[in-house]
Image 1: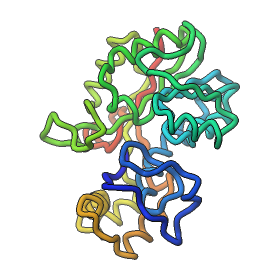
Image 2 (image 1 turned 60 degrees about the vertical axis):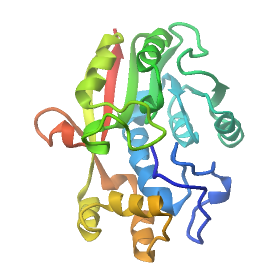
Image 3 (image 1 turned 120 degrees about the horizontal axis):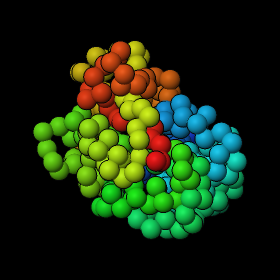
Length: 269
């Protein structure tokens, strides 16, 4: 998931390491671009908050995109294998992130033996897949009994409300919390926890500043191919992962259906 763009952005003076990043197409987020920083930080939350669940484990990241998350996990895991279908992403990650064992492959037929990893990480990918059930079955196959599946995805209820057709052209099917739970339990997993990503205090202030939604402020300009106001660019560029809250659906916090993204922690039966 990323902002919706009509072409590769021109690097601005404030962009961080933009020359080393993959092109921004709207299909995946990449680090190092100020105009993309909101979406990058929103993705980064899952890696940072769940990295400890991968510590000392053999980990597969299925659909690693740019590769920054797989490299982050490689700092705590015993090994990280990254599988992605896209040739350009594979070449990029192989060159940039040598700590990751990069492989090209189809997520519907993972190129790993049965029961070969302790954890599968799949962040902001399931919504891109045509055969989601087959992919979940593959995750169960390559995981050892009791292994973890860590999966995040945009919440359909808030990301594409009132429509069965995703607004993002790169998405095939988006999921609600109930639908994600059903997909995983039918695929051989028990849900340890379902969590939601929300705007924290600073982002709620920016929502109010930008006519109710800093997300809409960005998307409107991306769709219209308009220049960004300097103030909006500065607000987005200054965001960090700490500006997002990751809260469990345990009855003590907000309704999971109001979350921006869903993050499931599931255990292979």
